[in-house]
Image (cartoon, rainbow, N blue to C red; front, side, top):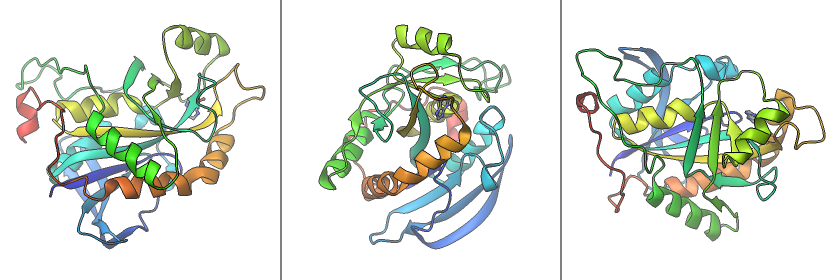
Length: 265
Ligand code: HPA
């Protein structure tokens, strides 16, 4: 049974669902990461490493999250599968606020953040395959975990990652929609890409907190995102915890191994 990593996004902060929880700071070549290690409190022996993407008290904005330190820390603690949560806006009327979506593709509109472990150093040049960036098998397990609890999840959605921290213009949202985007958020990339560079299997449960700019009839605020997340976070946590049980057991996972030397660290 391998350890599972959980990256909690907006609204998913306290791992009160872990027993024998131990907080620690992990040093990495990219900086430090705070994690809480433990076991799922509601039974079983699944080991979990939890981290807050946005740090203590949601203090780190999306473009300043130390994604490399976070993923490196998880990997160095022996994590092999990661489940991340994210608050997102929706571009797709079929994914209304409150919907939970198992993301299957991304579009990358980030501009200015370290997005690779292969930055021209001694590790050489590595081009990681991201044909299937999000683990299809873990998605299936989470979908079934939701179904078993009467919590519907949407299977598949294209997550557009913007640089932020501002929200988008309606013109941008129209353009993203034309390109095939369903959801918009500020953290999806490079997190999933770095996970794949390290050979980690990665899944993202996105919770829609709002219709994106121009689709929504009101002006968007971060408070709205936080409030709507708060209304739905119990369902999100329920599905996530159900899906985490046994996620670290061997099961056919089609995520390819990492291609470069860094994954062996
Ligand atoms: N845009 C970008 N990020 C978001 C949004 C949005 O509408 N909602 C939640 N995170």
